[in-house]
Length: 306
Image 1 (cartoon, rainbow, N blue to C red):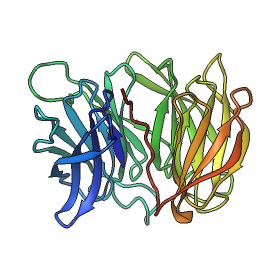
Image 2 (cartoon, rainbow, N blue to C red; image 1 turned 90 degrees about the vertical axis):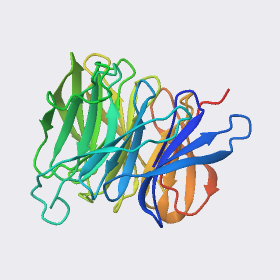
Image 3 (cartoon, helix red, strand yellow; image 1 turned 180 degrees about the horizontal axis):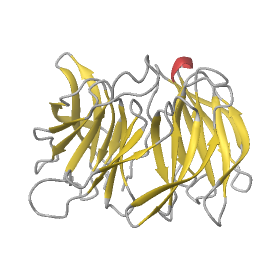
Image 4 (cartoon, helix red, strand yellow; image 1 turned 60 degrees about the vertical axis):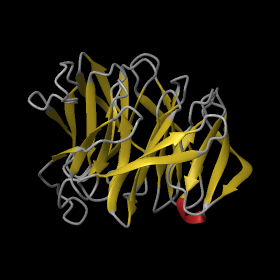
């Protein structure tokens, strides 16, 4: 998984090398789109699967799936990663095979930059950390952190926010639900749960909202691979399922173009990125027939370019 900075000057990625599990800092040439590795740091936890940059651009954070942890890396003057600080969690869920320990799957800051949300698939909760405004070098306020508890066996994976910042949409991998949460004054409340995976495949993966905030899309794997499509109520942010678009095999990740016209799906096991046209009025998708062939794509991101 990778993430670009807002100014498009750096890209940060997680991976596994001969040195172990690492977070990696890369400088991005905005003219050629070429990447130069600046440095790598150990994540301090196994199988990092998600990475994000703090709102102030001074820290990078990773979610370490098998490590049951998140790691916070300060950034140096060149954008390089300095030594990280790892926060390890405890607990388990009812699924003895897939929830025997904490499994941190993603980290995301709220749109108002006041909270960090860390989705823990293994313990069915969102770990919430207030962002520390004090100039003491610590990004997260750990003493005032709390958990948002979800239904046992849900397996929270990824989350996205509406453009107005008032609602969040969480995809759960194991129960295959989209959970709608209201967000106000640093508080998250569940207001709806709706199925994305109606086949009980236990492989829901990614979730995104259209730039206009009118439609939410969620990917499912393992059975009936495809994208569930939901319309968003303008009154309360709740969802109604309006369609389902079949895709290639194992749509682990997808992305909507910044202009909202296309949706690109990384189909890992058919070794391709599929390109779908998006109807802005209905939210439905149409296969353009265009494909980008590559080996096992798993993450797509748009990088701002000057």
